[in-house]
Amino acid sequence: MDTSLYNSTPPPYKCSRTPLVNVKVQNNWVVNIVWTVEKDLAHVPYSPPRYPVEAMVKRSQDFYSLMNQRRTVRFISPEPVPREVIDNVIHTAGTAPSGAHTEPWTFVVVSDPETKHQIRLIVEEEEEVNYRQRMGDKWVNDLARLKTNWIKEYLDVAPYLVLIFKQTYGILPNEKKKTHYYNEISVCISCGILLAALQNVGLVTVTSTPLNCGPQLRLLLKRPANEKLLMLLPVGYPASDATVPDLKRKHLDDIRVHI
Image (tube, rainbow, N blue to C red):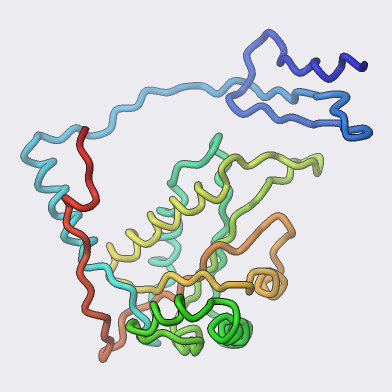
């Protein structure tokens, strides 16, 4: 038996918190594991602001009030939005934590009308099949009260479409793959921060996860094979005649457990 299977202990000197591992496989057996060592990261002092209790309570209440106004909006104005604002909210989303600090996200911003229309055609074609065949009666019936369907006019109308891709792995300078740990969870966290950042500047969106559209949209946008579409957000101001369902959110006691 080849004992090199067990030669996976990293060197006895400091390595980074995210060692890169190249695994050689022969006949379904791991025959060698090579540890690629990076220099240890320097650690620097961290002293964020510390607020008085009264200020903490006020800030937490104010932020809740802001976020509680957030709604999914399907009626979006074509009114232009400053590009700098979009860049800033995406920059904010990029502050999210990620597994081993791999930052496995790509935000593709589309404002070109023709490309937006091509996206709409792809999404609507697949969504019609989803509604008619894939989703099933229960799912469709659950959505009926929200008055949603496969027609996505907002994909043409919104000044920006932001497509968020998860990088399932990274590409090193030597073209080898770099592991992206918890890439989907990491990107989902960044999407949550993005939604909060949009709310903070008075913009609206609808969180769209186009079922079965990912491969076509990836090719349309010329994204590499390691990127998979996670979410599509039309972004803009709400239309002057926008409406939203009269929904109520769960009470704190229904979502919080103290132990």
